[in-house]
Length: 329
Image (spheres, rainbow, N blue to C red):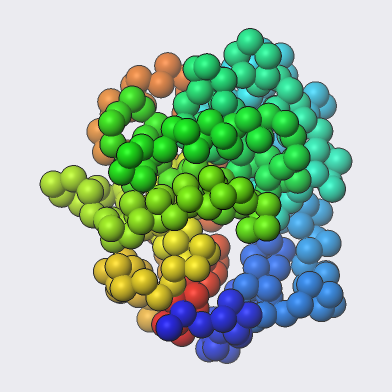
C-alpha cells in the first residue's frame, strides 16, 4: 500500500544534514516540504522559499537573462527562444519551473511572456497549431502551468490538441507514428501539472490511458534491448525520459502501489549509494550515436547544475520522494 504523501521520510542524520546544509534553496525547500512534511507556513520553509531566485541555481540562471527578457542571444527572431539547445529561453524556463520559480518573480514573468508571445502568431506551432509537435507542445503547456500562466487561452487550445494527439495505444510520439513511445512523457506530465479539480473528463481519460501505457511497459520495457539513456539519472531532464522521470510521474498520479512498478522501483533502489544518496549519472544531451545531434542544425550545450558522476541532492530528493509514495520507506 502506498503511504501518505505527507508522511515524514526517516533520514539518517548525515544524509539529512547533507540535504539541508549548504544546499541550494530549491533543494532545501523540497526536502522540507516533500520529505519532512513541513507545512508551507513553517519558518524554515518560508525562509527557503524566499531564497529561491535570490541565491543558488535559480539566481545564477536569472543573472544570465538579457535585458529583453530572453537568454542566450539578444536578437529578436522566434528561433532564438529555442536555440541553442539546451541553454536558450525555452530550456531555462523549464529549469526555473523545476526549481520552484513562477510569475510572481518579475524576471520570470518577463521571460515567460516574451517566450509565449514570440512563439505565437504564424509560427506558433508548439502549442496546438496546424504544425504542432507533441514534445514541444507538452513542454510549453507544462512550463505555462507551473509558472502560473495556466489560464492563457493558448494553453487550453494546446491541451485539447494534446488529447487529440494521443495514440490508440494510450501513448504519444513526438514524431509521426501509429504507436506511442515511453520517450514522449511530456503530455502526461503537462496534465499532471494541472490541479485535479481543473482537469476535464477528457483530460482524466487521457491520463488514465497514458498511465496504462507506461505501467504496461513497466516504465522501461520497450524495444528489443534496454535503451541506455533511460537507465541513467539526469537533471535537468528538459523533455527527455529516464526511469526516475517515469516513476516520479506515475507515483505523483497516485499509482505508487501498482505492482507493475516493481521492476523500476527495484532498479532505483539498486542505484542507491551506501550513504543513502543517488548519483547524477550524466547531463543532456545523452544520446547514443551522433545521428540526432548531427540532424539538429543548431548548436547544442548542456545546462548543468550538479556534477555528473557525483552524489546529487536533486536526484536524491526525487528518488526518496518516489520511494515514499510507493510505500518503500
